[in-house]
Amino acid sequence: MAQTQPEDFRIDISHEQSFRYLQAKQYDHNSRVRRLIITDNNIPLSYSGKELIALSLYINVDNYSNTTCNFREDGFPYVVFDESMLSREGDVSCEIRIYDSDGITVSTTFTFQMTVSKSLLNQDRLVASSEFNILNDLILQANVIPDLIKQFNLSQEQINALIEQIQTDISDYTNQFSTMKTKYTNDFNALIQQINNDITTYKSEFNSLKIEISNLKSSITTWYTSAQVAENTRITNENKRQTDTAKAIANCEKATADTNVATAEANTARDNANTAATEAQSKGAYAQNQGDRVDMALKDFEFRLRTIDGGELTDTTPAENVFDGGSL
Image 1 (cartoon, rainbow, N blue to C red):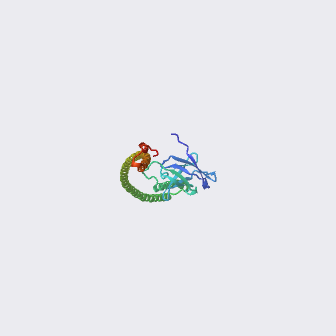
Image 2: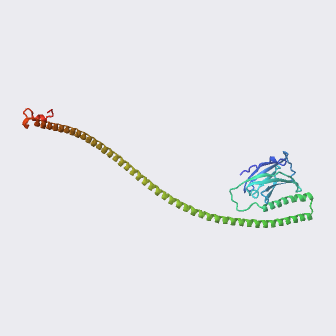
Image 3: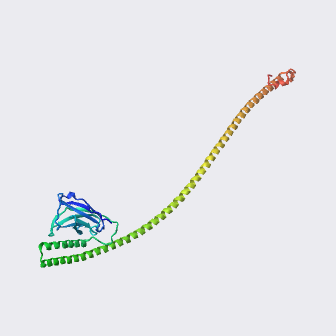
C-alpha cells in the first residue's frame, strides 16, 4: 500500500492563538504521523541537527507521555503517535520542548490540545500509565547521553558515575513500576469485584422487575377480561332496554289508539243518547199535550152531560169530535 504524505502541524512558539487542535484515534499504533513546522514570530526555526525535540502529552495530573521527534531527510522533525499516547479518549494537553545539544530546554511551546476520538475497540489491557511515561523519560535521557559525552569529553569515571546514576534511576523506576503495578492490579481487581457485585444486583433487580411485569400483565389481563364481560353485559342490557322501550312505546301507542276509538264510540253513544233523550222529551211533551186535551174533552163532555135534560147526549154531538184533536 502506498504511504501517504504526513500532514503538517504548524506551531508558532510566540503566539498562543495560532495553535490549532491535533486530532487522533484512540489505540492507533504508529499510524498517525505529523511533520512539525515550528516558527518563531512566523519565521521558521533553523536546526543544527543536534537538537532534541520532544512532544509531551499530559493525560492527567499523574499520567503523561513523552515521545522523541525524529528528523528526516527534509530537515523537519516528525512525531509518530504510538499506542501509549493514544490510550485515553478525550482532550489531551500537549506541548513541544526543544533541547539543545547539552540537553537543556531552550524553547517550549504554549500548551495546546489534542482530541483523541473514542475507539469502538475494547482494549483489555492498560496501555497508558506512568510506566510508559518513565520509560519515555529514560529514552530521552539515553538519547541525550551520547551528545553529552561528545560535547564535554567525559572521562571514564564520569561516564561510570553517569551510568551508575542511570542504574539507580532505573532501580527507583523499577520499584515505582512494582508499586504502581500492585496499585493498578488491586484497583483493577476491586473494580472487577464492584462490577460483578453491580451485575449481581442488577440481575436481582431485573428478575424482580420481570416478576412485577408478569404480575402486571396478569392483572391487566384479568382487568381486561372483567371489563370485556362488563361491556358485553352492558350491551346486552342496553339492547334489552331498547327492545323493552320500543315495546312499551308500541303498547302505549296502541292504548292511545284504543282510547281514541273508545272515546269516539263513547262520544257517538252520548250523541245518540242525547238524540234519543231529545226525541223522548219531544214525544213525552206530545203525549202530555194529548193527555191534557183528552182530560179537557172528558171534562167538557161530562159538563155537557150534566147540563142536558135527562142527562143524555144529544144526536148533534158526534163522539169522534171528542178525540180528533179539534175543538169540542
